[in-house]
Image (cartoon, rainbow, N blue to C red; front, side):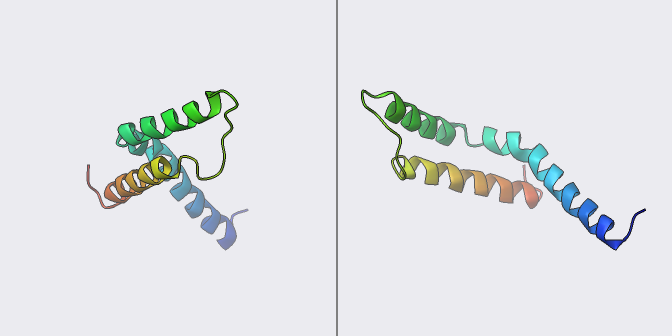
Length: 80
């Protein structure tokens, strides 16, 4: 039995699925930023006595987040 709530949930899940399908494309557009962030995290976690802590790789994370947001916005606006 489908009612108004089911229709709304279906619409929401459709948008979520669409965004998840686009994730690899967005990530691929930000390869350099993802690599820099990954290297920072790896170096911090594998250094002798190294421990990850909040904001340790904040500069690299912000660069990745900004790139990803720009790629997602470009995709949503129909760009390539």
